[in-house]
Picture (cartoon, rainbow, N blue to C red):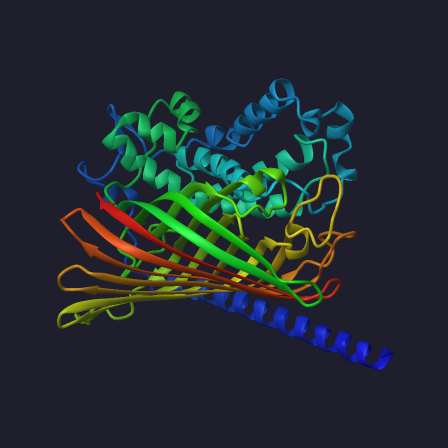
Length: 501
């Protein structure tokens, strides 16, 4: 018995070593391409040379919007922190916001930890807060990487000086890199929003309430880059089950869920050539409510079915290697996936930079578009199966998810026929390893392989409206070190309408 256990531990150790080698390879290869791609860049064009009154905001009321405002950009570190901290200290009176002078002067004694915050807080609110730091710097005409540095500094100030708790590793990662993803997308969309309806620019980019006042003008930047924009209301029903190695199978039925999703494609994903981070991105954000299966980590989840998700991918550096080929448009380069899926049955979150290949092929009576992303997960999360299904009963403040690292594979395939019918397939597959030190008491530790696939078919009924059917499949198998292995499966079917703008 001891010998077999020793062999098992040796195999697990070898798998972990192999996994870390793959992750390092992806990161090193991405770094190499990051250094080499600019050498093949298109001719550099200054902001002033490429601006034109019809598609830029270079000037506002005769004031130059291209000047860098260093004081405004750096002070954007403190503005959101003061507002959020004051609200939680004096309005909601949260314990973590009751920061003392000793907490701030002895910040160096605080060690980094993995926190137990609510799933929504860690993977949406912190990236959004990082996005506020980031947008403040972008509004002051900092570049993308300078704004990323501001997001990191803002996260550091918040974790060490604005919370009574110990600073959080996961918050530092998601506030910084998630802040870049969220911040750059909202910054670009806000420029277009301002031209459409002025208050929309402030809704998408609330840091303008501060930066417009200090800089005396609105942010400068390019406009009219939205390639696709649509809303998609959907009605679905789902059935799932969880099978444990040593426990009975648990079945779950979600009879009805109504949701709505907004899809944005900024710039054409195919044939894109740029050194400008997030000058091309795809964003799907949606939410819905329905009837629960009666099973959940908390009482609310037992009564209410829900689906909240943000799926995005932005190109950081990109090249079009076959510009002269009229039969296809290709994009290759570095990108970043930011995923957040919070559903009644399962959870997935990741911030993952890596390689991306996208191609559109023109066929005689149709066109075929496909994408392949290979990413290294800086930090991710997925549900802790045993805790969510109450196989393990716990008390006190405990999260029902694990912090992970690993790799992510994204595959997209879209076939558009001549008369407008669309067959669309999307796959997000993850190989996740639980951080061993993320939970000293309840750590599952081991490999988790979540996979989420969507297949849709839609048919246009007018120029702007189409109807379709949707099939979703979630599958996850977990090889836990401290608990029995588990398999979770959930199938959803639904109908939807798409409204194109």
